[in-house]
Length: 182
Image (tube, rainbow, N blue to C red):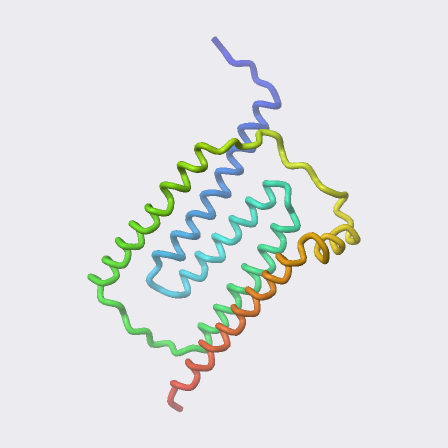
């Protein structure tokens, strides 16, 4: 028995593949950020994970949130961390291998203890099968009104996260410069 080919089935398969690709990019970036020995690779993994998350936001019909994810987290937070690394001291003391393996195993156990209930909860939830619907026409006036009324707290919270990242980068950069001998 053959299944007839329809454009809807093709679009469904392509849509599922795009969603899976965004998930893979996000998870690969998160694994790079968590397991890399070198700090520069960890930041690159973090940027990759944030980019995959922005793709998921875009896929879920929220291009504004995807753009803010790229601008704030990839463009500002990761760049601030890179800036701090460039100004900080170059010599890092390597961690002992036995300690890093133990920390890795404990981290994996903690992640599993967090992930198992989350996966069970996701399995029991009723997920919407209909695609997301645009709330407005996407005009600048509607966006500004929504940012200052409905999403005002989230907008301010994002700015606080950005401010903390910049302050952290400056603290790391200042302490690193003070230790370098002329």
